[in-house]
Length: 217
Image (cartoon, rainbow, N blue to C red):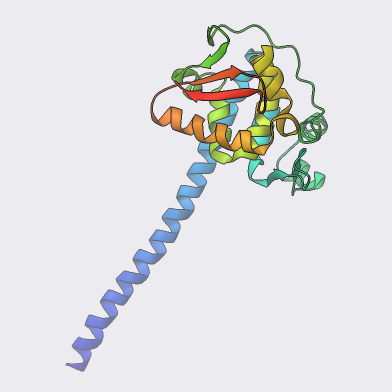
């Protein structure tokens, strides 16, 4: 009986250990797969953004380190918890990437003049990004950044703003210094919500603060 009892106890214990071990392995695999998927998306978006005259590599680098971006104490700009050495050695930032990244964080980045794109719908004073463009177009980058966090979105939007242009693009180019981090918290939530509902995002210039109102439409 003792021998049988030991066997009965040992088998479930062994099974539990196997399940736990396989669970950890699966979780590690999920993380690796997720990272690989993220890299694939970033590469695709970089090419798409480049075709619109936006620095796609810079935007994708911003998204990659987005969880290490936070508002400054005075709330007037962004900052990173990563050192330049980490950005270069771990995240493969080039010297130009590094320079432009710090410009974005400090609010001094000047986007290049973007090529005119025809994938965005306009209706009166609003600037509209459709559901498809949030999922598959150049503005899918904003959706990806929104999932990382409002700070990543704020930084990415500064670079992507050249593809928007007009008063809305000018406002987004001002980043946190002009709009505040609260604006990007709201924008991130609405972009994620819009994609979940298969809807788009409309930007309405307005008087007052913030100078742009966002609606899911």
